[in-house]
Length: 474
Image (cartoon, rainbow, N blue to C red):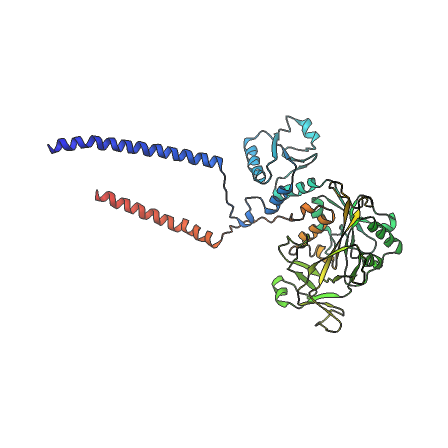
């Protein structure tokens, strides 16, 4: 009787188990299917490497967001599935920040005519098109891509005239006091830096974006100054780099701009800051606090200005139509030394000027559109007035090969050149990308990683031991 009852109970029990197992497998398959659908539809990735090495740099993201035109990429590569997949994965990183990116593959061996028309010299090159402009590159690394996109985003080439003939700093000089490193960076971004002797040519080219006076050491002739003043009166933009000392014949330019360029040298007695930044001379001024000027608001590190002087607005000039904005203020521990800076120099209440002091000045003014010439090209829609821009700095050393790599010096210099060229949209774009090779984790990330490596195996061991003990009791 008991055996019959047990036999009758087994059938519904087995049926219930089959139903339970069927439901489990159906739910399991459904969950796997949902996970597959969600994984294909929604994408979320995390990059914990230093500087986000496996994702686009913030500089590249900013530039892509500012570009409004479609970007077309034509890869001249063989019909290789592995190469095609790798390029598609790479371009997807860019497409996250600029949706209008089109990628096309062309086999140069099968279509040599098109390759020749696009200026492709060999297989493996990539043609980057932005609007009606294009450029072929041999590398798809991020720094190359951002440089090309910056060049193509400019409506026209930027010709920068560096006046010469008075021992000015030269963009072609590769010595420590030259500007060749800066020239190399700017050339990749679409600038053309050209030395120019106005005594020989008696003029300034009409297609000049702006003129650079880079710390002359000899006096300008009266005829040369007249050409510069005439250029300024017609709305030309200017970068004037001044060093401690005399004006070298540019007194009339100083007066026209309504400025006072000091002759003394800025010093700083903040030894703690000097030791932290590795500064060995009190005449090397470090600026770490920036205002809200367009040239400095996005700088993240200090800028270094060796042997600089201060610049003030000339309060005696009342009828100036310039708007003035001081930039690069020194710390309160600084002062303008009027005497010799050799030996143990100390602040003199009677002769020296206490800080904080301004190393630079931004000047702007509105000029009628009819009075503006191509000396101040603006690639914007026509408007009633055009803004003339001038930057005057009490130092040129920060741009030199010896110092351009210090802190944010390169970014600040690039901002100056972009702003004077009226490329305001590129001001927030940094000048270099520094990839990292290390894993960068927060304290929370370290704890989570430790839990993954240590706690999880222990949990699995405990669960395994628990299941083993339960089976033994059966």
